[in-house]
Image 1 (cartoon, rainbow, N blue to C red):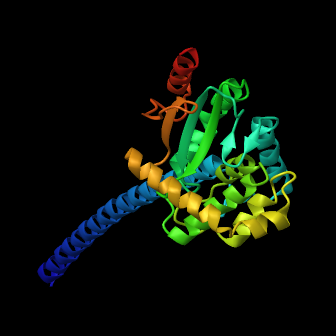
Image 2: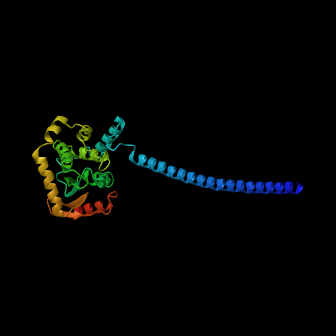
Length: 275
């Protein structure tokens, strides 16, 4: 009996050792799994943090504006009106031209109102050019239409004609600058009738009734078509593109070194002014 009992005792101890070994294995496996889970959660947390940071940066960069571009608050609208008025106010305008009609140098600026690169130029190199040369009477700038970024030809004609119609009241450059300041997200379909009306409402002194009726004049459509033909003749395929020359003389293609730094523009203009 004692021998059988000893065997049973040994068997029990073996079973306990096996059980203990199995438990250790389970604990070790659980620890490995837990470590892997913690690692995945940490990685996920990092990814989430990066995504949140990117979203914050984008919101800061865009000023939290919607795809439509039109600011929601009256304070934002007033800030744009003030900035544009400070830039072009007091400078002669006639149709699509900003600057004195007797300015010795002319710069032709081919643009698409929905072109984000045009916005870079309009908010970057252009203001100091206007302040130094246009306001000083040595340069005038002609804005001309070239469809590049706008996908729908009819939308392109509508938006460019809206600007040209403002030019019939000598306020085209107020309209242009406001549009570029509040340009929406590309390919988002933000250019609607409401958007165009909203831009017009921010142009001080613009007679909206007159502006609305003159937008559909065939002459404006012909002007847009003519601008496109002139761009094709110059070999332009993108915007912004430029021609520069002595007023009344031959115009030459000008390729700027930068659209945000006016240095190369200043050098070209100064050379023509001195000539």
